[in-house]
Length: 224
Image (cartoon, rainbow, N blue to C red; front, side, top):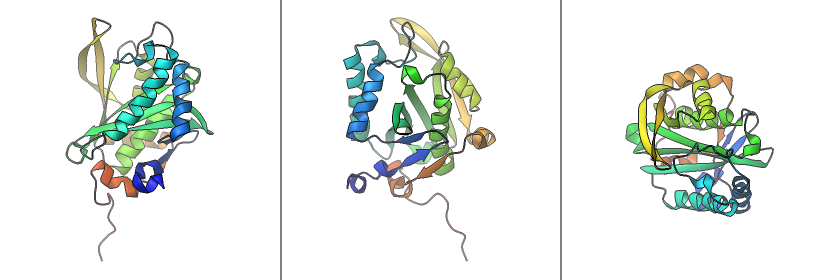
């Protein structure tokens, strides 16, 4: 079975309304179709990489090729886990957890998009909470960082709700102009203050631990 070759296909994060997991082939096609219908309103540009500006077919292909690239390039010291977001089996969008040198640095970053029809329903907050629970409660992260454009009000709101705090700014080029992003950081102690607001369960993690550069169980049984 595929999960025997790639145990990450057995990793499932569940929140009250959502299930986050690696999509199989037909599910990836369904997620690509969601992206083809749009992930933000005309005139908005919440992403540094303008993948959402092209044609519907271009957006769909970007989702598929991005997924294959992330999995093909996976290394324990540099990984990107792109998960489909599903509600009662319906594909809503995608979220991802990323890290470099995680066993040493213990810091993660995230990205996300949801189909335009699923905005404003709290799914973004719930899905990000699922990623953070995996990172902090199961992988032993000490911090999570995100860079958010100052005009990306929805993502700013999600980050504030989940306890992120200001950590400086970054400046990037977007559409030929310099644009400022707020750099936000959530610490493990900050996460502990909000984790109970959204219950999260994680299944299928133990076989995946070496893929994250974690060869030993995070919680060892007491001696004696």
